[in-house]
Length: 226
Image (cartoon, rainbow, N blue to C red; front, side, top):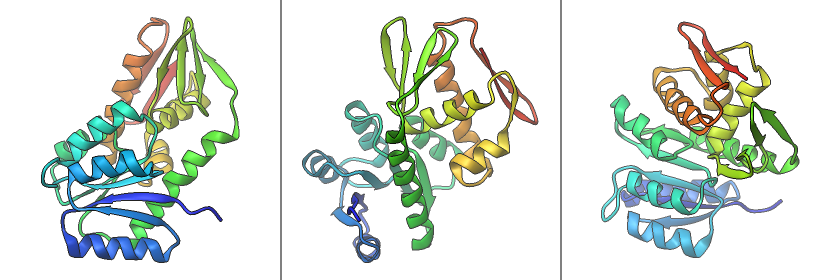
């Protein structure tokens, strides 16, 4: 079984050490950093498969780090560790490109489940390469690309997942709770807000074809019209 390399950035040494050792006992190869600048350097040097990042770190905070990493890699799964409870902070994290978040204090089992789920989804992208037509766009889930008249746009992991879910029910109402429970693991308020952020991003990326709409049916869900 291949070992997955994870980059962990956490400025609380005791917590970081516990998380590192716990992940290593589960077979993960963990690179542990104590601040955002070190994490950026190690990301470039180590080429990890997944990032687990604290939001509040010295030298470079998690939001800034993710913004910089997303300019280099649109696809690597990223999980935020956050003690923040304000909805705006969680939504901001997803807006910068995070795939998931775990609120402190958390159980190691919860973190490991979320890590495995993201790695499994990333692996699943390589199982097929067929493109589907969405209006004038060509959508390739495996490659996470949207192509319009020969020009490619890269999608993030979560954007591709969400668009795939909408496409599978195109021209039909898609239950909001179903998407949230399938992709985010539950349909709580924080996850619902983050999904709204991704819907807005997808609308912008599909805007060149005026015949495509993602409708919000209040109280129920979304409908991809194409």
